[in-house]
Image (cartoon, rainbow, N blue to C red; front, top):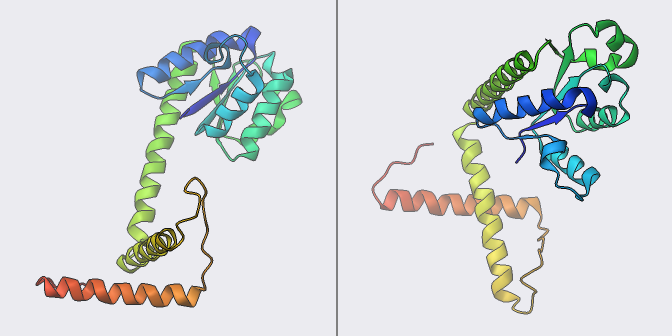
Length: 213
């Protein structure tokens, strides 16, 4: 899966993009640069959109020609629509031009750079920091999940799987290559979950363990 999608304008931004890709690779962070990752004759637009949809971060390299690039703006619009983690990178000296040509980019926390090394260092640092922050948030959310919620979720999966097994064992003419959805009333599912929970608790007691309520 592409973690970082690098958007740029070829004439002034390609060398920045290539160097950034190499720097990310050293940190084992995969990235996508159209000029390097699309083979000649490939369906460019489809490949670009597919990688953009699958990326975690959208890095926008704003050089002087990128400010007026229709393709760059389309990629930015799609990234924004898909709620990607957007990291704009503005080359030094373009402040006034950004205000005129690409003002909406200023709504995001952006990086200023002069050299390709400076750009790479800032982007790698930002990506790693945001990944760590995201990991910490995930841990915080996990800690808020109660034992009861975890058990209830697992019981729901158990009931669902049991119902699907029953369906396949009683309907031998079904096409195995197709997916089937079993619509059942919520109160029936909840009753089955309670029944399964009681069976599991009883099995735990039979084996000499204490059930944590």
